[in-house]
Amino acid sequence: MAGKSAGGARAAVPAAAKVEEAGEGKKGPSERVPTGIPGFDGLIEGGFERNGIILIGGDSGAGKTIFCLQQLYNGITQYGEPAVYLSFAESREAIFTHGKRFGWDFEKLEKEGKFAFIRYEPHEVANIVKEGGGTIRDTIESIGAKRLVVDSVTAYTMFFKTGYEASESLLQLFGMLRGWNCTTLLVSEELVSLEKTKSDRSEFLADGIIYLYHFRRGDVRTRAIEVLKMRDTDLIERLCPFRIEKDGGIVVFPDTGIFDELKPQF
Image 1 (tube, rainbow, N blue to C red):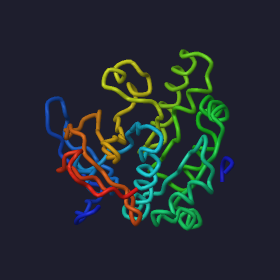
Image 2 (cartoon, rainbow, N blue to C red):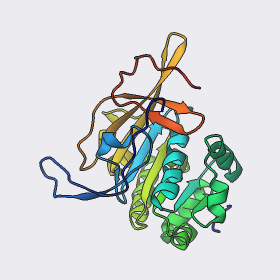
Image 3 (cartoon, rainbow, N blue to C red):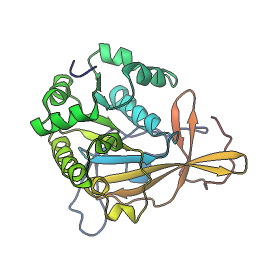
């Protein structure tokens, strides 16, 4: 392989399907890629647009990695879509151990040829981007991957000495990602704001932006998720609370206020 190497009833999630888009300027149906995360897909018309690039933002501990791993695992096991996880920081062992905490056996999926983990330093990926994809592209093609996670775009841009260099490399990175025909999640450690989305290059280039919050209310913390942007999608524009459950990961509660009583899990 390339590189170094919800509480409550859960509604059934539809398979990837053609979903009619509503609204001005939309040209008809687009194929949706469901995450399989309980309560979430209804916020974005059933799933991400096929081959879209989505930024997943949030502070440390907000649940970004869990969100990404959960939609990869569901993609493989529920929708038959092989996946690749490209990491600039976490080791294969750390990611696999993290997944097992929620019952997601990525090691088994890797042995079955349905999942691949790639570990690179940011400067190595910068060179691969210049070459057009190289070993990363080969890995994606070898397992027929349809879903990809890049963790994280923040670590990647920090490698560059100037904002101009980072901006130009991001442009190349996005161009490369779009050529791979994968629905891609890019993890971002930076704080996202509605004003910042107007100027930040990665957020401007992305098809969607999802942000995970971890509020403090007295001595209790409440988690919430918000879809800030999703191209060609009628959004449910509100913060929705979510819970992280030990036996299944994230569960979103789209019809509950963020400060309504939800028993904390961890």
